[in-house]
Image (cartoon, rainbow, N blue to C red; front, side, top):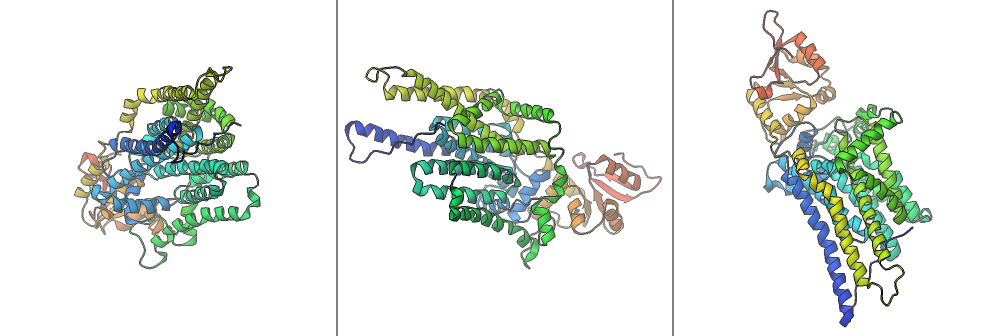
Length: 548
């Protein structure tokens, strides 16, 4: 295994003459190592802001624009780390706009953090800041990454955590070689980050086996250091437990702390398990070992859409990583396979978000492959030459820099070629559909009405009520609300309120709509924008009915 060489120690202040050159060079390199991640992070965040959703959205987006500012609880698995961070960010960013915009902006910032960390991660892996910048920029403009930075979504925080965990682990490996006395703190930091990440997204659990393998390979005798192992376990568990306490506390386990919006009943033990373990999604795993050729073809298609012609180079890059950085190859290779295997078997409305971690890993492999090619060329430059007449160290260094710049052009060329297309595809700046739908619905719906709603439309209605303080007289009977408050099935809740209050309904399932049209008289709202919301009245045989 070829490992990265230790970076040269800076020269002392007593250096003079020719020694001053290495000292100045070291200082410049250190300054660049700090500035590059910051610059790339800012640029990555700017890409998201450039294409940012301006306000409220539908579906989960509206939920994550509503729950953090009021410190509520979200759908399984609760995402308490994101909710807590979102609450803080929403407060800090208050001068910049409405809550929906602030939560959208948080995603852009988190993607910027992830890309900035990736720069330093790759710099440590390749000893090249240029290649770190390449990986950071490439990741920022990868469609699934760019898209997740344009609207409120905890997957943006998950990407930042994955980058930070990999970075802390690689720094730990480096510190064991160069500064053993300071190495343990990096491992403890990685453990704490993992615990917080578990509190954000359960996908982090898929990283547990790869991290364990990596740690054992880097330090085979670590199990004999039981105090360190125990400290790491505590560093994982305590942050995860602390952030998950947000669920029962804000669900009302302590009187007076209940949030205005609570998903399920996490203030009870059964309800807490239901949310945290995502029990309602257990049926999402479908035949994990079936149709493997089709799943591989789908993965290849996804990789091509995200990386253009680079996926084959990323595969080669994994093998280069296995040669040059074997522990890192074990860590990321196993994480990549486990995550992709799980994703291929899991049915989700937007499964591509689950490939953010693999996208980051692929860019690190590409950078390591580029470094391997550069070293091959630079090494061959002086092979067999007399030390007295062969190329100087400065010439070899210049060759490495030129090689890194050439690699940057080649690796970023597909991104540059597809930049306009990708920017158009992720653009949400003109999306005011949810805001316009809300305006139409809330203007036309009668006072004290009940809207029997479905999740994608319930969430913006909650945003309007809880964040904008609009139409608090309306009761939004989401499917989740009906379940938590024991209101009964769709027709039961409608029948119980007809004649008592105005009742409206919006559904996306055509079979449900057909059944409702057969049972009631449904009249769509006058506004075409809100035509999917129907006023419900008792069926009159001779009254004209709209068709579903």
